[in-house]
Length: 261
Length: 274
Image 1 (cartoon, one colour):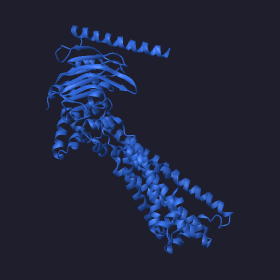
Image 2: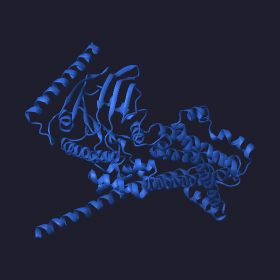
Image 3: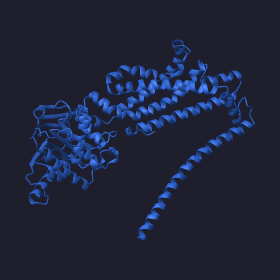
Image 4: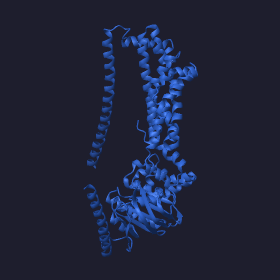
């Protein structure tokens, strides 16, 4: 497995339809680090992820593993929130094989790799099924396996468990942590769930409310895994993050009321 | 033990009952279809009793006419001739329309290149070209196949364009992030995503091919269902007109069934629901 690549953002500003979504962002995520981007809906978290993924143009400089980002590429795997990202006409195994197929890897070899990663996420038994036959949690596992099979140095996860029930989410959080340890990839994980960020991240980055969003705070989570969120240090950090975000949500609501009035 | 056995027995009797229930529902639907057809025939029969056969031949007279046409070989030859023209023209239209629609849907410049012609000719019905087709391509098979091709290619192209443009952005991003370039994305994401639209286009085009074949064969054909219907006029045989129309409807229905069966069997994984 490729060791995690460093993600570096310098003066990143994104404008969409004349509106500045995120403004002047500087952030360095070390190789192999797990960073959660936390913030209320509409603050530009996904925009930032899309910039790193190469889906959006930006002024400023974005490098991954030292190379400037000019477009999407297999060195940055993306797990999307919606399972629509899976190809419905391919079986689960064929979905996981997709990256290798595009690279022209021989069939036997890519099946073997796909099955390896399907076993890793616990989906080997449904390899021959189509995505529509799986539960929401299984589909997200399939997306994760598909990304892992491409051996990316960076994995970008855009609220991957946002649409799942609490129990499934908890299980998958543990899986992601285990996979991160096993692969050593750099992970940028977007969420609006404070506990999720607390369980997973080395560092938690919060953003101000958009438009014109900036980074607000960067908090180091210095707690051993598996994390106990009822520990005093965890509770203190959680409270701090909740206040930060509540402040931003309040500002957004105020701004909306002003626009309405 | 005995309790378990009785549970099992109840379970299996229930499943038999539910299987019977499904059969009953199917029988009911089938029964309604049969009643509908028989009812139509009955109304036709009643109406024909008081109307001259020249205006409205009875079902029996129409059937006798069809038997007559079958025995002298006209009917069989007409079915084969019309079916072959439709199959050839339609297939050519699909073969050209699908890639054209894919490229027009995916590449803006291809779309802009062909757009004026698509937007113009889509309003010109094939019947307007019958005369030209005969002048340019002669009265033989080619002119008729060309007209079927013409009617098919637009419908298939327009539907395929719509499909290629409706591919979710998320799928394209997923492919790009997995290392697929534009052409690989076209082949591995756009084309499979568009299959349901292609099938819809092909099905509508099949219906229109039947509309077109009659006009084409009326103008210039010795053989074919359109020619049969038209030539009956020369002999004042209204029952042949009725027979020709009924056979045309049945052949069209069978073609559509065949297409749906094929699409469901071979394109199932592309989420084709026809």
